[in-house]
Structures are given as structure tokens and as C-alpha cells.
Image (cartoon, rainbow, N blue to C red):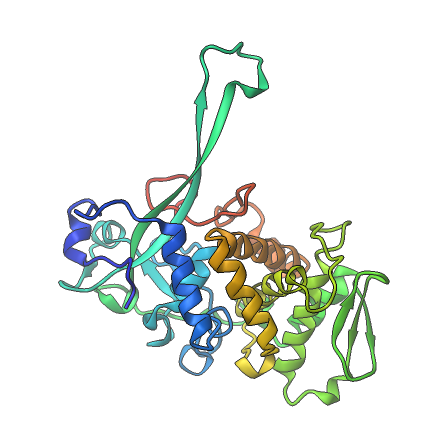
Amino acid sequence: MNRTSTTARTETRGGRSNHAPRDHYQDVTDRIIAALEAGTPPWRRPWDPDKAGGPAMPRNAATGQRYRGINVLTLGMSPLAFSSGDPRWATYKQAEDRGWQVRKGERGTTGYFFKRLELRDESRPEDDADAVKRIPLLRAFTLFHASQIDGIPDYIPPTIAEAPWRAPEAAEIILANSGAVVRFGGDRAFYSPATDHIQMPPQSAFATAEGFCGTLLHEASHWTGHSSRLNRDLRNRFGSHDYSREELRAEIGQVMVCAELGIAVSDSDFSNNAAYVASWLERLRSDRKEIFRAAADAQRIADYLLAFHPDYANRQAGSPESVPLADDGDTANAPEPMPAAA
């Protein structure tokens, strides 16, 4: 059960409750920790390919915008994400404004958005760079899945003509356009920061085409961290905490890209290295904001790689779906009427 959920009745009263303010960072972190302790990293299977007719990123039913960053994980963890092939969510007000009705008694799922409050110190000169303090603020809002809403139109998945980046060759197109050096041979898949190249076993060594594409995109996720690209610190010894920190970002980034491309990735396509999970748990327990930073970095990875697909890039050009990522890595979509609403 989602501890941060609320009922449709509570939502109609302005989304407020009588509870004391929650620590949203800790709430999300606790849920991720519980999933990891249960042996199920939530980003590995946020979508059920068999029921959904292919992976699909969660999106807003009213605006069509995709949810991003931490919301991809939190919405994907909801059992409702597995109950049908419908990836749509909406706030109570969004549903009501469109003549839809959230069924009485339905429990909502919490979404998050991040903003910065700017406070000016009037005692300082206006041109003083330190006169303005920017305070990060994480806010929560309530979403309902399409299966909880009466009157909502049936969901029709996009066709290949409508979303050509979901064609089988999408991963190869992205890698070709990226200019990444990919070498084939051997029995290991890895990205080498020293030589700036991706090493892959031959495609015939993979049981499925999806497994090959998913692995290729995973290593491409690491490739984005080079200093000439997204500039993450890749000088990490295998098995170290910093190495597992980068692995966390690459895993989530891979899932985001594969979901957008319609590539089904199963849990068996990931390394189940117990040392990674133990390191992730240690990091999350000591820093309640780490999963938010990881999700934001993963979103940057996904955006960077997907931009190399011309059809995807052309569709996104000028789109209001892009929500800026915060400097400290916290990101989400805001409910109406916030800017960049989702």
C-alpha cells in the first residue's frame, strides 16, 4: 500500500489532510529501500510488457505529457501500473474539469514536483550576487490512474507511424547517430572511459534481440558520462561505492530509454550483483535525497540518448513536455496550474 496515498474524497477538499507535514524525500527513499530489500529494484520492471503491449512511460491523461525523474519510479511502483496497458494518470481536478469522475473511495498515488523559492535579503545591494537565496522545495500532489476514473476515453497505444522511434531498429539508430565507438568481441559488455569506447559481445551471444539492445543502451548510458558529454565522474574502481553509484544511474537510464523505445527488458537482462544492491542500500539509508539525484541523472541520460533519434528529436522540438532538471538533481512534473504542468 502506498503510504503517501490519499483518497478521492480527501483530494476533493483541496488535496489537504489533517496529518503533519511529511518528509517526502524520506517517504520515497523508504519505499525504494523496501523494494531493494525484497529483492526487486523498482526501476527494473516499472512496466509489464505482456499486459501493456510493450513498455510505456507514465503520462498525464489530460496533457499527454510524460512524467519524468522520480515520478517514473514512484508511479511505476504502483500496482496500478501493472493492471492494464494504460499508462495515464490525472489529478482529481484534471479529471473533473474534463467531465471524468474518480470513483468514490479510490486511493490516489503521490506524485512530486520540485521548485526553488527565491528570497531576497533587502539589507544587501541589488547587484550583490548573495542577496538572493534559493531554497529548494519538494511538493507532493495526488494522481489517479486511468483505471480509477470513470468516463475517461479508452487508451489507444501509438502506432509505429505515430511513434517511429519505437521501431525495432531504434537502438541501432541512436548509437549510429551518437558517434559512439562500439567494438564487438569477447564475453563482456562494458564502457571504457580510458579509450571512450563501448565493448559488446557479438549479437549472436544474446538470447533475444531485446536483451542485446538493452545491454547496448546500458553501456551507452555509461558512455554519456564522459567529460565531453554529461560529465559524470567515471574514475571509479570496480566494486567501489562510486562505481555502484554510477551503475544505479545507468540502470535507471536504461529502463527509461527502453520504455520510450518500446524495448521490453526483463530482470534477467540486468546484473543481480549483490554488492551493487548492498551499496545502493547503504547509500540510500545515509542520504534520503540520493534516489532523487539518481533519477534526475538518469533522466538526463535518457534525454541525451533519445535526442540522437531524429524522429524522436523532431517530435520533441518545442514540446512543452520537457521539464527542466533542478541543479541539485531533484525533478518532477507539477500539477495544474503550475508551469510545465503534467
